[in-house]
Length: 446
Image (cartoon, rainbow, N blue to C red; front, side, top):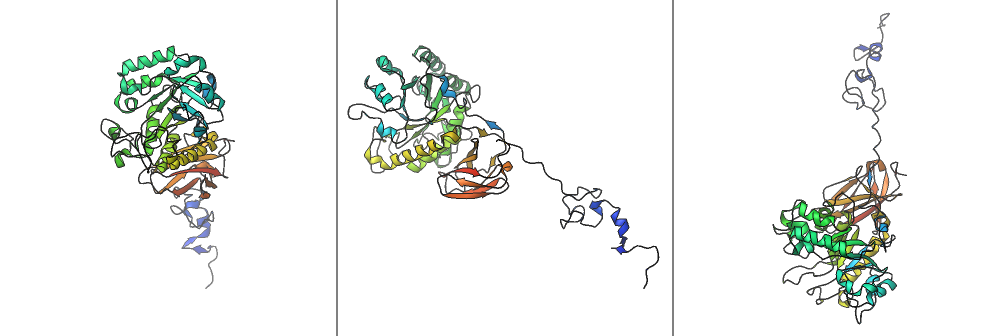
C-alpha cells in the first residue's frame, strides 16, 4: 500500500525526525557507538535529559605525594666522623675484640659496618676498628681509653635500656646529663631503649627519653620473649598482633612505629631496630628465632621506617644443635644463622639507595594482609611488603602508573601491573616480597 503524502517513515511508532530532535540519552539511538543506548544503560548518561551519550573521561590519577626518610637523607653528615653515606647502618651489639679475635673480618664479611658498644678490652681496639674500615658507637666505659678514640667512633651512648632500670623522670634527667658531659666533639649521641618506652611508661614519660638522643633504637625480641604478649607488655597495646603469643614478624615493625611516633618534631631523627639472631634468653621452654624469622623481622623493621638494623649476636642457650655462644657471627656451629645474616645484609646494601629515598604518602594502597611501604628512588617505584598472619593473595595499587611490570627483586619472576594494580601470593606470615615497578608512568615525578 502506498505511503500517505507528508508522513515520514516511522520507527517503533515514533517518526525518526521526532527521535532525532530528542536528547541523545532518550532517543533510542546508539549515538556514541558503544552498543549501549540511552539512560540508564549508557554510562555517559546521568538522566534522560542529557544531550550526549559520550562517556565522561575521568581525570588522570594524581601524582603521589612524597615524604623524606626520618631526619632527611643527609642526617648523619651534620656530625663529625659521620657514618659512611654509601652504606646503610648495620650494627652488631657488644662484640668483644680481644686476644684471639683481633680482627673485624668475621663481622665485616657478613655485612656489619658498625660495632655498637664493643667490649672495652684495650686501647688497641679503636685503631683496629678504624683500620678495618668500620665504625663504632662507644659506651661511657671507653672514657678509660679516651686518648685512643678517633675517627672510627661515630657516636657515644648512655646507659643501655635506661628506661627499664630508672624511674622515668630520674632516668630522663640522667640521660640528659650523660649527653651533656660526654666528649661528643661533634659526634651524635645514641641510646637504646626497651620495655619501658615500649610498654610501661606513659607517652609523655617515654617521649622524654626519646627526645634526648640524636639517634634512637629499641630492642624488643618478639620471636624469643615469652613474656612479651602479657597484658603488662605488648598484649594490650593497640596494633600489636597477639596471635602465636605475639611471636610475629610484623611486631618488630610495631616497635619501630611506637618509637618513631614519640619523636618530636615528627620525623626529625632516625630510629634503628634490634633483631636477635638466635636465643637472647636462656629460659627453658622459651623459643629461639629461626633464620627465616630473622629475615622477616629485619624487613618488617625497615618497612616500618627503621634507618638502621642492629643484631643481638649472643645466644644464652643452645639451638639447632649448637650450644650457647658469646658471638653467633663467629661461632662455626651457627653457619645457618651466619648465612642468613650475610644474605639479608647484602639485600639491604643492594637497596640502600631505595631505603634512603622518600616514601609515598598518597597514591598508594595495599590490601590488609601485608605491612607495606612504597618508595620512589628517582627512577622507579618500589613496593616493600611483609605478610601478617592470614596473608594469602594480596593486592597493591599505584593508580598513576598504569600498565607496567612488577619485578620481584631477588626472586627471578615478575607480576603484571594493570591500571596500576598487581596481585601476588604470600605463603605465610614470614613472607616478604620486594617489587620494582618497571615501565608505566612515572606519575610526573621525573
